[in-house]
Image (cartoon, rainbow, N blue to C red; front, side, top):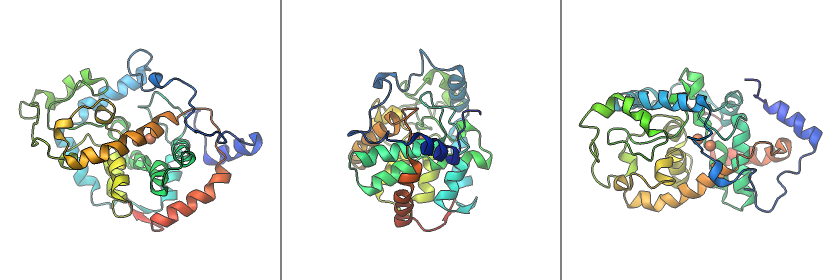
Length: 289
Ligand code: FE
Ligand code: FE
């Protein structure tokens, strides 16, 4: 809790330090080697393991369907992208072994990294907002229902899923219908027809689906599906469309992950006008959440 930093505090830090941290040629110059990110075994804090135990036990087909029914109507709030950021300002992601900084900071890190490498505006915006679905926590959802890796439910769990051994405690693990290779799905049915573990990805997809290009929507919907985009699991559920989109997912993942160089100071005041314009270009003033 004491690690939380408000946007205002960041602004003060930036003002006093006079940041130049983003002046590097290629922004992904992280402070630790790439193979040390997403370490879920050797050096993983007990809190992260506990988090995944809770997540894997609770993410059943029945649960996912009930959360979709609950949130698809988008009747929980009517607010701007910036209001959602204010909410996110107080959240630290318990599932993430790579950062203890507030979420707003991760938004700026990811987007600035994409901007520095000359990516298109829609992708920079995607980087900026991709985790806004984490406001689910303010609707009373536990962290295991909001953050962490996602994976298909309703078919056999892959060993490539993070801390997959905990899935043996998921009730669906003992349901023979759900534990064949394809389960309730058809071969190559397309990931849009697969129910994923419920979290911030699918939820934000609902919120922004009328406003962003299809590549952006795909990234938002599946960016936490690491078993697929990092380890190639579940390719037998992918169709041609997924194959086409996979490259975007992989590219985005590099920025989502490796821009988390804690300690990098972003000049929030200096970059803010750019993001205000970008958000206004794609979104109405208020959205249904
Ligand atoms: Fe995320
Ligand atoms: Fe992220």
